[in-house]
Every structure is written in structure tokens, then in C-alpha cells.
Length: 88
Length: 229
Image (tube, rainbow over all chains, first blue to last red; front, side):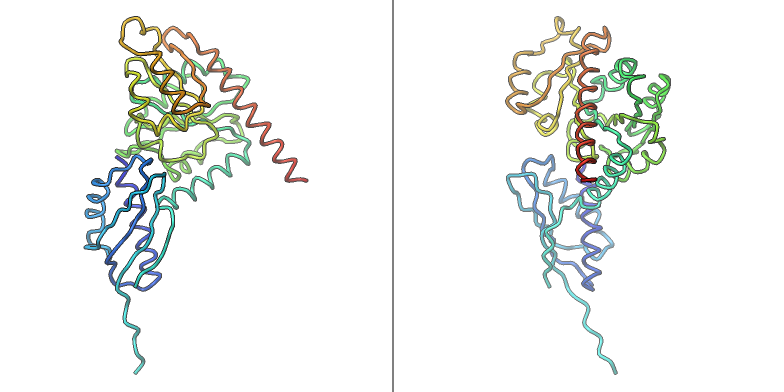
């Protein structure tokens, strides 16, 4: 039930790291979710697709790795970086 | 490009909770997070136990509900400072909601803060609010199977209070199974049987709360001596 709040926090994190690394587009987000958390994978996927719309994360592949514990971690993000502007 | 992050998704909530916890510790306030289903009797429990705690302890209450200020009004009617958080649909309380509520309480006038969480056996278990003790309430009308169906909620509880025991003769609640499942899941848990309606068991619950406060105060006193070192 609280998957939307989790994805909202995740999106803030991804956008923060994305802009820190001057990403123009995020293409892949990998998270680790423990089996001992009360989190439903399908709801996470749904919330991710819905909340990422209109952001630099829109259309990114969302990978959920299940672990046995209580993990709720953002593992990696992948994306395209801004081309360094050449000085003329 | 790929960036390795390895960070908790709820790190923003964790940071707020750490900040709230620090504030509560500085004010020497002991905090209890009260959780349970809608209708288990969380507010009735507060109403019943309050007169047994005060004036010895100055209690403050944070009430979490999706909508309405009904619960805060019930607690405030007892002369207890109460702040209502309305989550407007969200299923749990989090660190930033707690920060807002703490700002509305006179923390210098409180010894014990009780947070009545949103009625829900799932989501609140995931969000640590910086509490010192977790008290979970289950009522006999809900059935003993809730322990194994919602293990996350009961696994970390310091105490589980079984409410509405006056109804035991009329409902099919497996009391033996309840004790068996709960002690298997959480061997350290304190289990108390109460009826908010008849007030049976409430003095024992008040004693349990007072013992928690005393234990936490002792811990804080030792920590402050060690700090002064």
C-alpha cells in the first residue's frame, strides 16, 4: 500500500543523482527489495511507470532484485550524459 | 554511464527520523508507537490508560488518521495535549509528518509521547518513527491468524496487547494459537490481555508503560554520564 511513497522517494533520489552527473536521460534503475518488507513488486512497477512520466526517468527500465532480508535500496542507475560542450 | 549508489530508498525519511529522535532525546521524552487495525481500539486504549499514567507522567499524543480530527478530540477531551496528523490517503506516518506534529507540541511539558499510528497492519511497520517502544494492539474479533498473516507488524513489537477479551466467550478466537504463534515469531515480546470496555488489564498495561519509561530514563541517564565522561 505504501509503494507510491517508496517510489516517490526513489524518484527524488534518482533525479538528484541524475542531475548531479548531468544525465539527460535515465535508462535503467536497479533496486533491491527484501522479502521481509511489506512491499509488492507489481505495485512498485506500476508506481514507477506512473510517477516517472514527464521526468528524465520516463521510459527507464526498472529492475527489482529480490533479497531475503529487509533491504529497500537503490543500487544503480544508468543513463545518457550531456555531451561536454566544446568552446569555440 | 552507470552510477553505483547503494543507498536506502527511504534515506530522506531516515534522516528526518534521526533528527526527530535527536530532538526527543534532547527533551528527555520517551516515545511509544501504537499500531493496530482500524477498530482494534487504539484510541479507546489511550482513553482508558491515560488516567492511570497521569499525573505521574505528563503525556502527549500524536494522532494519525487519513481524515478527521475525531481521535485528537477524544484525547484532548481528557485534558491531554494532542496533535492530529491527517495524511489525506497515505497509509502510514513518516518522518516529515512527525516533524510537523512535534513542532506543534510543547515538548518541555511532556515526559511520554504516544503516537497513535494509522489503523493498518501493513505499512506503518515499515516506517520507524524514532520511537523507543512499539506497542501493537490486536482485538479478539480480528482473529488469532493476524499474527502469522502480518508478521512484520508483530515481529518488532515490544508488547502486543490483546483487546476486547471480554468478548472471548462469544468469538472463535484461538487464544492458545495466538500465544504460540506470537512467542514463536517474537520470543521477547510482552503480551497483555485487556478489555478497554471493562477496564480489565489496563492497570497492568499502565505498569508496563511506566516500566518502559523508567528503563529508557535510566538508559538516558547513563548515556549522559558517559558523555560528560
